[in-house]
Image (cartoon, rainbow, N blue to C red; front, side, top):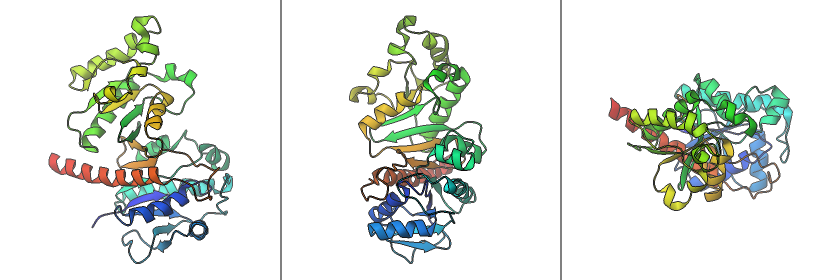
Length: 332
């Protein structure tokens, strides 16, 4: 029996429920999944948009109803479409925890998360994590996880993530860079089926420091790490100038781009494919994907939210499960 992907509702005041209803209609069972959400929230959105759903008692059987399968989770307040409702923060967090437990227990095959608003969770429930990636590392019991954004055109991994730009230099260490590249390299093999990954690395400074004229981090930190990894068998060159890494011909030469900070990674992929990108957390004991956008309060409930990224995220989670199973069987 194919186990379904567990989808969280995310912030119920955002577009998560809307795009889930649309994704279920578009996929028509090709990717088995269910959403954990307040049935009242889903019913209100379903009535507004005329996309069907049905409540399930267990993810073991998703048949017997039309549209989106929903496993009920009680929320204290209405969804508040179009704006934050801090009173729902604790339930939003609890849904993520519930979904993770279902994946770890084998009830679901993988986790897909709808967008959350970190400020709302901090205000409403004292959320102690910078974002989904760090929270899932905590729930997964791992010291370090890695955020990858990918689309058909490009895969990128930022070494530092949800910190201010002025903090990047201090956060960037040889240990962090090494662990990030190793986790990403192993995931490309296990979850993406790339037997010999080719990895490109962006420098921290303009023109990768230009021989030290514009910064020395490439010479003193980044390239020594890359040299060690190269000696250990990873297909990786020295740091490159980020402004020449992302045109079509350059992208043909690698399978993954490692970037030093958040926007260095996210700007190129969102420029190349704004609607269809997927966020994956690597290094966890389970597979997790997410649409590559936020809660979009400004359009929530209007019916115009694009489900393409969620459809891609659900499909990617399903494909990664199958690829990981093949890899693990081959490894014995």
